[in-house]
Image 1 (spheres, rainbow, N blue to C red):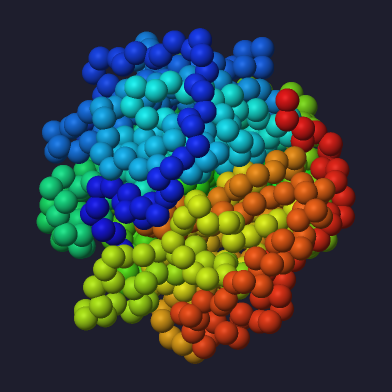
Image 2: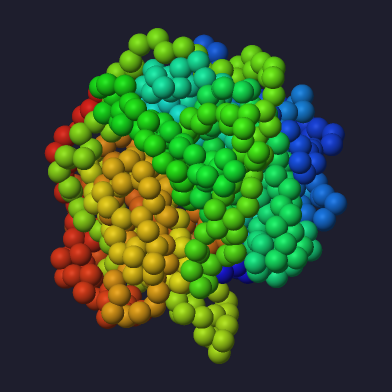
Length: 619
Ligand SMILES: [Cu+2]
């Protein structure tokens, strides 16, 4: 369910008003001036081309961004990252081990609703409706200030900030993306289009099937439907766009005149589609269709990780599917063949989503119509290099499946609205919870101590339940997780998402619960990989950003083994002070075992400090 609140800042109203002094900005960095005509957007029905690309050299990709906004014909506020020479949301190509140095100036106008942020701050010590920061989604990078830190990093209008994000040597080659992540206004920024792709180059050397294929960077975003008509039938909750080309929707719920983008392909070509669901709220279920018949999509990577080669010992191989559920913020990379001349209509579509009784309306619609062309030579940079030799350096996930489990935890999505809508309960204000079994349920509050403390070097097994009447989308910052199982999806008629179990993801959807107290909650079980070098405060949340903005986020503090041992008694004290959720249902109590409560803050020394491959150090 969605509330049309422009700024959900009220959820931050408990922030401390007296912050520590603002951390000094980098001194000699000149601002990035605003560019004229920011955030240009193509017309509906335009031809899809790749976003502009920037490549690292000598281990560094230095980018200057002006963060700007404008308003379109429907008075929708558009946001964008513009380079000084006018590139909008360029694809940032880096190699494992590179540094991504982004100098960004927030060139928005003054915001409203200023409030203090408790220290230690990273950038400004107050935030408002124009604040900015950048999340490097899916990257296995550090949550420290000036890297992938999103809780305290605040760049206010007129301010300059410099990121220096160190990609680990064993970063899996694949597709990632960047977007603002200021709690309370993330949805608005993403609906405005403020995002771009990150490609860690080199996928051909772990997944040779893509060698020398033409690559398409395909970014799906969403935005308000002009006039915000009530969603029903083919009038969606959100319009989507493909590389900023709007896929306009019918105004009549019973009509089907969506306007897809045009995607030219050479007859007989095989192409490498690299799709990011960079939508704020919209769930996708991708299908490649010839005259109504689903075609095989050869999936080679999910969430930046090549499939079937995660141990980085031997080359991977594709997984064949005929549709792929792409949660908001997830990425899938797959190979498709151009249609033969005999096909009348070839399209990349998203199927309709059963989001649950409280969920959005995400109807089936086309994204792009394939147009066969005789001569469509790919421009320079749009072809994947040839396979050279198997890259065996990316052993980030080696041994994860069989690693000892240091802690078992149960976390859950919940809302203050009952799963079955009650016309007498308006659920005002709407609240969304990323709950932890054994802790009091609460909306996100950066000033609370983290609900979970974990130890760097370990692997944990989490069960992620959905106790609400709509689908939610689990995201973990800094690390990937291995999907062990998708459970109880059938209680509401949902099926498991194809090709996800056994893969290493940073996103997974948990479908809605039907509200029947005799039914177990739909859930997924994952192994979370803390064996990398990073410590600090990581967040995990629903990536339907409306839900995240309204509270569905939580913090896990990952401590070094030394620090974890020193504060062992302290974390037990926190656990003892916690009380179980008062909203636990009968079905829940069966799963909220005493064991789950007891181990909620158990700290176990890691079995090994050494990350497999030994290449996990930051520079
Ligand atoms: Cu959600």
